[in-house]
Image (cartoon, rainbow, N blue to C red; front, side):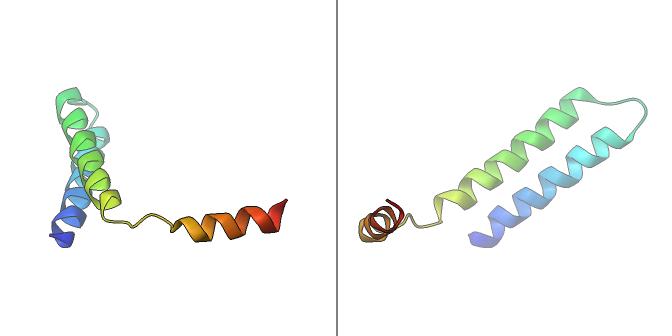
Length: 64
């Protein structure tokens, strides 16, 4: 499933670049590519774990 997110990101990037490269831009193709790109990034970011609460506390104590 992780690789599917990377495929979405690459597909969205490729479609967006292709839609932007032509002299006669297709706005719907560009918007579709950006949407696919953002969906891939969103799905990938959901799999990144958040910091533990203890790590944040020690960082705050060291700073101030």
